[in-house]
Amino acid sequence: MANLISIFDTTLRDGTQGEGISLSADDKIKIAQKLDLLGVHYIEGGNPGSNSKDIEFFQRAKNLKLGAKITAFGSTRRKNSLAEQDSSLVRIVESGVPAATLVGKSWDFHVHTALQTTLEENLSMIYDSFAFLKRNDVEAIFDAEHFFDGYKHNPEYALSVLRKAQDAGADWIVLCDTNGGTLPTEVYDIVSRIRMELNAPIGIHTHNDCELAVANTLAAVQAGARQVQGTINGYGERCGNANLCSIIPNLQIKMDYRCISDDQLQSLTKTARYISEIANVHMPVGQPYVGNAAFAHKGGIHVSAIMKDSKTYEHIRPELVGNKQRVLVSELAGQSNIISKAQELGLDVNANNDKTKQIMERIKDLEHQGYQFEGADASLELLLRDAFGEMKEIFKLESLKMIVEKTSGSMNAEAIVKVNVDGQTVYMAAEGNGPVNALNNALRKSLEQFYPSINDFHLSDYKVRVIDEKDATAAKVRVLMESTDFKNTWSTVGVSSNVIEASWEALVDSIRYALLNMSKIDNAHDEPREQFGLVNH
Ligand SMILES: CC(=O)SCCNC(=O)CCNC(=O)[C@H](O)C(C)(C)COP(=O)(O)OP(=O)(O)OC[C@H]1O[C@@H](n2cnc3c(N)ncnc32)[C@H](O)[C@@H]1OP(=O)(O)O
Ligand SMILES: CC(=O)C(=O)O
Image (tube, rainbow, N blue to C red; front, top):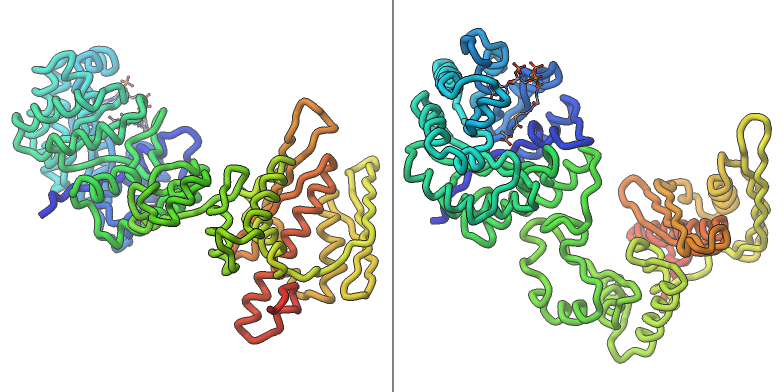
């Protein structure tokens, strides 16, 4: 039987101590529900002694039906006072949580310098505070702040602090690498020794200042820690906390510990991405296990091998954590990348096909000119389908004129397009608050009579990058456009030395791709493929 590791999530408390992260009570409720589905055992909701948002969270959390225990955070009582009169401790008990975490000092230097009190008074603060929680029937977790630094500096005192908390009834003793400066070998050694000294179960709480929070957590578990504190995506003070999105799969898939069920593990990627959306923090694409590129293959040699067996370049099956394999097509592609992508699209290709080589050469040539297909999935699909003769022209541009006018107030743009659809010429003008907006409006208006579903999607993001900065205004620009129909998003690319022309290319691809995919949906209802530009073979 695999050993069970208790997962203590502190995204809503220590995670919000990360720069740029601020969660409303509403956000916290949504995240708590997701964490519960993921199967964590404790959800530290915040600090009821700190602010009214957290008090509101704890009030609302009482009505949630969760499997996880919601815990409140605070510190040991203030020096020279009584626990029952400490407003922070009283608020924790009043919040009605089943479990609470108190942080207390275990480094003598901190007692003297930060608390400015005696070592004896700190021991009393710890004892009194835990005794108070236990008298109020609250499960009590001791976060021994700076434990590893304290133990290296004064082991007797650091140990006496843990014993005080244990004597007062603390249910868990959690050793904290608060400054994140300890090495995995030290963590393993110290946790192994402390385990022999205590009866209470041990937990671990690490910070990532040396990029070692995950490694330190795993070392502590190997040495006997049975509770792991961390955050989703590693959010947290300074360089962050230990990242549960790496710790949980490492423990469960590689080290044979049990944290959550296998089904719950498969929701890890979705959970990480959901929380990053709510926290409004962009996830690094290369984030281990759950990042968009965690199982993305770009080099031709890699793709050639994974098509034979994905184990050649993947340390686990991505599905175990709810992620998926992706093949990127770029100037580093070999035939295998093209074949894999084309197969994904249902196109008939093989390694001996001349067309595959031609497509690869064309992609390499376009990337050399400044296109980037890795971030423009829709343009890549169109390029492949065009090469296979799958696409029909949806319109022909006859002319395009732009007028940009600055009056005393704002600057406005007008686009005039003349397009030909199936022999019929349409002449249309439209305004916009900028040239791309005007272009988009004019093109849609001219096409809507032929393709009414053109109004079911819109542009959601627009990025311009100067490709060769040294040429200043004569440099080429790459426009990346993102579009959405509220269910799906797709990205397209355009390159030119003229930003309007680059935008036009990306816009036309966006519309062609949308119509192509709407035709797929309509196909399911037996409507003709030709209607939206797909050629039936
Ligand atoms: C390692 C960690 O992450 S610990 C958690 C850190 N998180 C936070 O600080 C976020 C929430 N904090 C807050 O909202 C506020 O700091 C509060 C409400 C807790 C306290 O606010 P204030 O009363 O204004 O105090 P302030 O934040 O300036 O200073 C902290 C005080 O707590 C004392 N203190 C610090 N740690 C402890 C402890 N473990 N036990 C008792 N007192 C402590 C400090 O000595 C200081 O007291 P002083 O004012 O007598 O010098
Ligand atoms: C308790 C805590 O957050 C720390 O010591 O880092």
